[in-house]
Structures are given as structure tokens and as C-alpha cells.
Image (cartoon, rainbow, N blue to C red; front, top):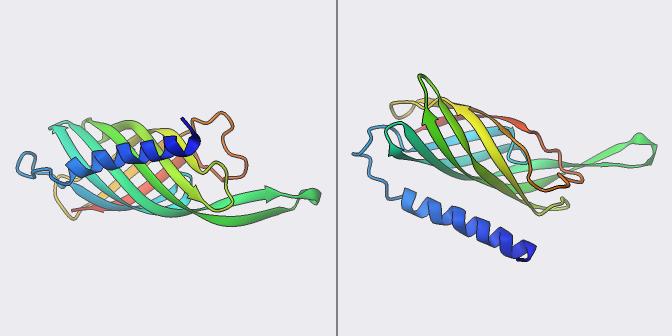
Length: 172
């Protein structure tokens, strides 16, 4: 498979997971099923704004599907030790499974970011491990701390990729 064919395939799989999530019945599990959150230093971005749909497979197992838009930095070192930076637009997506603990969910899954501009690679794919709070009622704060590492053998040539990220959002 060519690079762009893989990117299109990954995006189609993630969109295919979002569509059934839109029709989830809230009567099965009386928890909020949506969240909007800001992400800092994750998903190959300095900051992003994301929408997430939570799907409870069982009362203690959560599948979350999210997509958003963000921006990141490209750093280039030139002769003399000087650094130049430029910004790029990215579209992060992720699918994770969460397992409920006493007060938090432990999550593991996969994510990716389509990166436009003068950044390589054009699509970055990465596994995700996270811990998150999940409110029992709508209009409550959601917090997630996560770790992620790119799968590509050469991580990035010039993208400022941060392996540790933080998200703060609101459930509804």
C-alpha cells in the first residue's frame, strides 16, 4: 500500500467507528456520551480542540472516538546554531478503550494526526496510554493525562512531538 492509501484507509476506519457512535442510546448507561476538550502537547500538536464520543460497551468498559483540529511547530536548525520555527495545521483522531478503576479510567488505543504544511511525515500514527476522569453527570469537567510515541522508525525530522499530553474538557 502506498503512503496516501494507508492514510485514507486509517481515516476511513476511524470515521467508520464514529458513525455508529452517533446513534448510541443514552438509556442503556446513564452517563454523558460526549465531550469537548482542549488538548495540550499531544497528538503531534502544541494545542488542539477536539470532539469526543464515548460509547459504553459495558458499564465498566468505555470506547472513545475523537477528532479535532490543532496546530504545531516545525523547528529547523540552521548553521550557527540558530533555530527557525514555523507552524502547521493538524487533524488528530483517536480510538481508545477505557477500563474503569475506582475513580479513574485506564485507556489504551491508537491515534493519528494528519499534518499539513512543511512538516514530515504528512500523517503520524501512534499508540496511546492514558488515565482519565470521567464524570457521572453531564456538564462536568473531564481530565486526561496521556503518553504516546510515534510508530514510524524515524520519528520526525522537524516536528516538535511531545510524548506527554494533557486534556481538559467538558462532558455533555
